[in-house]
Amino acid sequence: MIIWVKMIFTFSRLAVVLVVSVLTLGLVDASDLAKEQRWREQVSDFLVDGEPIDLNDGVIDFFAIYTDAEELVDTAVIVIHGSGVHPDWSQVVHPIRVELAYAGWNTLSIQMPILENDASIEDYIPLFPEVPRRIDAARRYLTEVGAKKVVLVAHSMGARMTNYYLSRETVANEENAAAPIVGYIGIGMGEGNDAYLEKINVPILDLYGSEDLPGVLETVDERAEAASHNTAYQQQMIDGANHFFDDQIEALLEAVTAALESF
Image 1 (cartoon, rainbow, N blue to C red):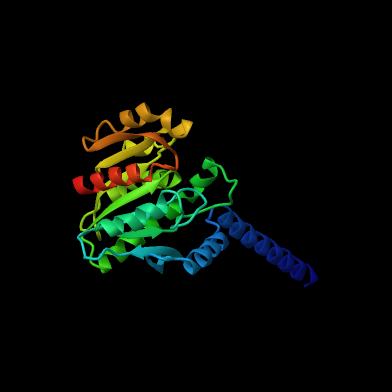
Image 2: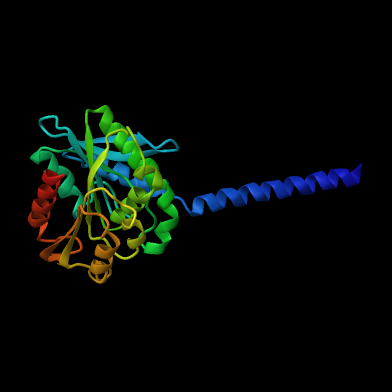
């Protein structure tokens, strides 16, 4: 009897250790939700343009900012930020989400999975499976508020996440999906995008600056080769612009607006 009790106790301890280990491993490859919440609180308190909302991706709620144009339009824009930041980041993201709304497009800027500030590009890759749920949730929301078509506009790591999303077989073959994607503008795409671009068929504007990061500039030809099957793929360089388009926001907005009008 004593032996059986000891065995049961031992198995119970092993089960607890196993459960804790599984949970811990799951958290290692997940977005920093505490950081997401801190961003939400800080951004919501100072938001001037747009409405803070919570979307549900089927697993968790996540933060987004919806900014509607004065008149309802068929095409809406999902804005996707880079690594570690939020849907109202002052560089690239805020100007795009606000100015496009002023120009006539409803925008939905969404919080993407994030990690600590010193996380590397490779650290983000295990988070990519979380990306489709969030973009799909954004598309569903835009459909509910009247959008008929969607264009994705993504910057830096957000562009790589978007390429991952668009390259999936389920997106390539989807039919009658909510708010179909009719175009994509990837801003400052860096290394690691080739394998995704080879599988994407939606119209793409690959937008970057002449003073962009080395990983962006050194892979320009590789990206073009990877997307050579896509007759609606184009590249555009903005002279004098760095990765965050400091002092070149007007040129960035002109390029984005022209692409939106062409989709």
